[in-house]
Structure formats: structure tokens, C-alpha cells
Amino acid sequence: MSDDGSAAPNRLTRRKARTRAALIRAAQDFLAGGRLNAPILEITQAADVGMGSFYNHFDSRDALFAAAIADALDSYGAWFDALTEELPDPAQVFAQGFRLTGRLHRTAPTLSKVLLNSASAIFESDRGLAPRARRDIETGMRAGRFRPRDPDLTMVVVVGAAVCLGQLLHDHPERDEAASVDQVAEDLLCMLGVPAEEAREICARPIPELVAPPEVGAA
Image 1 (cartoon, rainbow, N blue to C red):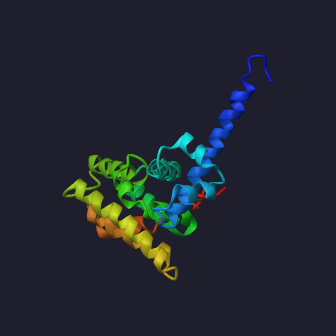
Image 2 (tube, helix red, strand yellow):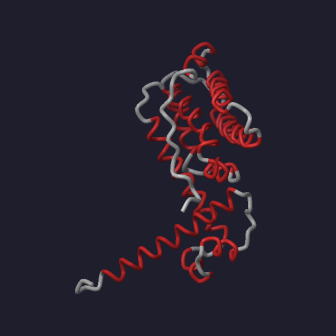
Image 3 (cartoon, rainbow, N blue to C red):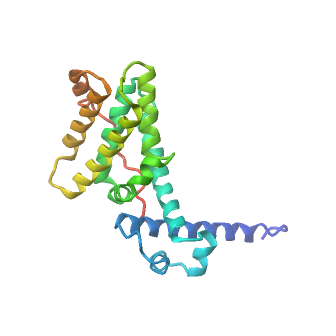
């Protein structure tokens, strides 16, 4: 230990961080399973931490679930930005982001289910899918690529399409997710004012090899 005793506080900080992360992972598993009313005791048992430790980090189950959703949205957001940041055309940015997001429902199922079971939080959050969709739509409007009649209603359609499409892909594992996602992305581009032939060409372009974000709920 150093003379100033810093080693012990550092160990305590790391232990607290591990406990918080374990609680968030456990909460994400419960969210993915749709168990939004799970007792705190069950969550702490799944996280292998004590009830006292829970209240050192969160004052309620709702606060824990909010943190778990925020963590999932941040994981998604960092992944999304890394795969779309260098594209010059707003229409391609929007389409590629939607196409990659749609494929996550099969490649990162736990993350997908956390987001699907938190749909209202997704729409209202300043993290994750909704703010990026709005940003890309507004960028396309400024560039003259998009002409939505009402940007707020457009957001309802885009986020609703992303959520409902994800649920469809979970409910029907036999469905070709790439073809389904690309078709919806093409339809959304048309809704935004991109000519149909161009929208089809954009959604047929190659996309980056899909490396999913780290799965939430994983130890």
C-alpha cells in the first residue's frame, strides 16, 4: 500500500463498480425477459450481491431499470456512430443505420429485447436510437435530401417501424431478416422523399461487416 493509503480506496472503488455492473447486467436480463415487476430480491440474487449492496447504488427497482436501459442505449449508440460516421450522404447514413440496427435483433438478441421491452423509453430518451434518427433526418432536411411533411410524425413512424420490425423478427425466426430490414429501410427513404429507384439502390449497397456491440446481460 502507498503511504497515502490510496490502494484501499481504489480497491473499494473497483469493487463498487463491479457490484453496480453486476446489478445492471442482471436488470438487463430481467428486462430482456419482460420481467419488469421482478422483486428486488430476485434481481440481487441473480447479480449475486446482497440487498444492502443494492441500496448503496440504487434507491429503487425503477432507478436500476432506468440505469440498465441507459447502459443498453449507450452501448447501441457507440456502436451505431462507429459504423456510420464516415458516410457523406445523409440518405445513406439513415439507411445504413437502420439496416444495421435491424440486423441486431438476430446478432445481439439480449440487447434487442432490452430495447424492445423499453420502447417508450427509447422514443423519449436523449440516448440511443431516437436522437440519432432525429439527427440524421434533420441533417437530410438541411441537405435537401429529405422532405418530411412533419418531422415529429416522421420520428413516430421511424422509431415505431424499428421497434415493430424487431418484434416481428423475434416472433418469426424463419423470416429473412436482411431482406425484411432492407425493404423497410427502402420504404422509409421513400417516405422521406427519396425517389423510389434511388432508395432501392441505396438499400442494396453493401454495408459494413456486422460486429454487434457487446451483449448486455453478459458476464
